[in-house]
Length: 301
Image: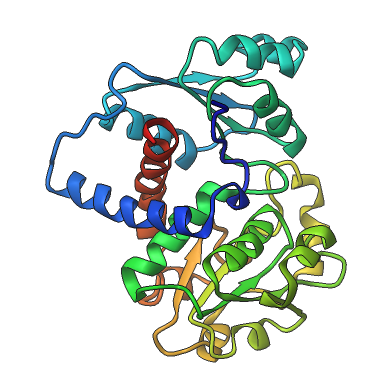
């Protein structure tokens, strides 16, 4: 039987995704009760990092440890991938030795090609096109604080980047309305947008995007690999900071999310990210629990 992969949110059905979210909440409660649960004992997760990360590495490593398994960190310096070995060959070899592979890289085509030749589940832990694991944590966080996200309105403010693409897919899969406020020239990929139909709307005014929204979220203006564009992007994104005025446009019980790391004074004001509507620390922690639920789904079902 071919393995199930998780390269985008579209790889799981809406029912499966909602099941993963509910299971993440259950697993989180088990950790808080200090219950020992080791469904992945003696199993190994290979973690390929071409882009560095704090939350991704710590959450996946800790998750595998809590599940009784092992996580193997592989940087370009540690593997033949960094010396030009074809992705197909690395996939064939690694997938005969480990039980799942997590990849954090630049080009989305790399994870697609790896998955094509892998005998075990492959998880996209971030590419330039998508960041689906983050969306599992984000939706879990909303559900914990406010209940079902179906039928709600989410405001995305900032770049039409990999996080925006994943929010577009999440709107399709979880049944919420997404308003994305992006500067001219920084819209999300048109193919991703077109596939989403009327569940996504592009606007130019952050306050209009946040109008009566149930959740407001953003990301840094210059993602990893775009640092040389920082000054250009600062000018383009002027007026797109999520500040108190933007949050005032949202519903009174709206929550604020940010995938982190955050730049206070750029894409978000300190008063918002450190304020009462912010749940970013729960969101960050939920990377651990949501990914554990995903690993359990992919490796034990």
